[in-house]
Length: 254
Image (cartoon, rainbow, N blue to C red; front, side, top):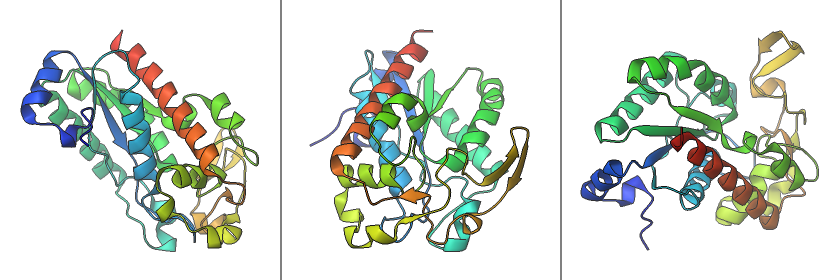
């Protein structure tokens, strides 16, 4: 069955029509990287694309979901293998050129939905440059941060999305269970379990030191997949999609 909110499943003619209707384009940006011993490397790309697809069906106005950018900033995962990464200047250029292509197709409203922790700081920092170079503002948000209370309410061992953890494993069980290996869930734990566990070590709120994942976890996991379930995953995907849809509607109404 075709999904008429997806750019890649639409004809150019239909996209021109939706552009003329003032549709918002959601651009999912993610990563392809190691996700511990139990999950496939495409977790971020699959989950982010699904959240965006669901959100597009919930928005009040016409919405199109662009193809997911499957590569991002993942230098902190490279020691584990199985990962791709870009340099910051290249990533910024790729994002800008994709947005420019969307605009040349006739669309005037773009929301970038991020699905990878390593992209957050860069995307926030480049928002001003994007607005200046494109001549319009671009909405930017990371899906699990849009409604943190709903995310926390669905979890037992953590309060937010970490890495290859209870949250991501649950969402993969809901979306693509064939890409999760329950026989290895007992190995899928490690690292710090706070929200400040990314590729930086926080020594104080104003001082950070970069570090790779090897310095934080032997397994490539931050958190514990033991209490993951498809039911939790469905709640997380639904809450994230609803929060993103609200943001898209608000952005379109500006």
